[in-house]
Image 1 (cartoon, rainbow, N blue to C red):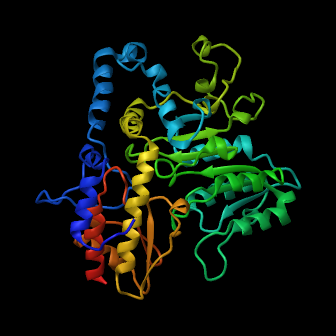
Image 2: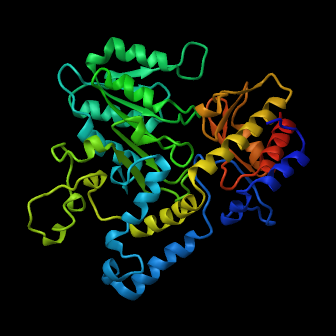
Length: 419
C-alpha cells in the first residue's frame, strides 16, 4: 500500500485495523505519571495479557482449596494441564498436536533433543550453526561436541558474505555439498536474533537431508512471530521459548517439536523420567520404562502449573485471533515502520533486516553508524523501550497484538530528533 509520513495517516490505519482492540488486552508499561511508554521489545519479553492474573489465580485458588487433589479435581486438573496447551501451540507453529509439547526451558530442551538427534560417529560428527547464532545455541553445540569427545572447533559456521549482514541459502548448500559426509547435525536459528532474517526452513531441511544430516531449528524468535509450518518443512526437531512473542512471562516454559517421522520411534535414545512414561501405568510406580509416542515422549518431569497457566492465557488470545491475521497485520505494520525509518534523512542509519516481508518477522534491526549504547539510553529517556545489541544496532519489534501505527510513527519522530 502507499504509506504516508504523517500522524493523521497513522491514526487512520489504527482506526481501520480490525485487531486494534487487542492492545487493550495487554498491560502497557507506564511512567510515574501514568503515561504509556512506547514498547518495542516483544522480541525480548512480550507484554502481559490482562487475563494472565485470572488464569494464575484460578490455579492458586484450587491449590489453596484442594491441595494435592487439585491434580484431579481442579477446574483444570493439573495431571493433564500440559495437554490444554498442545492443540493451540501446534496451530501457531504449524504442527500436528502429537508433534508438540510444552516443557522445560529452551536450552535444556535443545540438549535433550540432541541426546536423541545428535548421534555422532568417528567420521560424521560436525555441527553447522549460523555464524551469528544466539550465544546459548553456540555454547550448547560446543558442549555437546566436547561431551562426545570432539572439539568445539568442529563447529562449522554458515556466514554472510563479505560486506553483507544476511545469510544466503546457496552458501549453506555449498557447505553441506562439500562437507556433508562429516556433518551430523544442522542446528539453525529459524529467525536470526540479530538481523531478524527468517530463513527458508523447508529448503534448509532439504539441504541437510540430502547428505543424511539431522536438521534442528531454534525458533526462539519465530514462535508467535512468523508461520514456520514445521510439519510441512520436514525439519527433524525444533524448540522455542514462550516469553517473547508468546507473551507467557519471564523465563516461562519452552516448546518442542519432533516430526512425526521420529515421534513414534520408541527406539530413539533419550533421557527418561516418569512424565515420558506411558500415562496409563505412570502411577503404578514399579513398571519398567515404557516411553510414550509423540513429543510427549521427551518430557521428564511433571509440569509447573503456574507457568503453564500464564502460557494458556496467551495461547487463548492466539486461538481467538489466529496466526494468519496476526501475520497480515505484522507485515503491514512493519512495512509502515520500514517506510518511516527510510524517510529519516541520515546517511548514518540502515535497516539490516531483509526487505522482503516473507523473509522477516516483525523485528527491524536498525544499524546506526558510529552509535553506542547512549543512543538506547536517549530513547529510554524519551520513554521508548527498544533493545540495544553491540556494536551499533537497535532491535525494534512492533508486535501486532499490542503495537499501533501511531506507536511506530511517534517512535521514528523521536529517533529522527535524537539523530
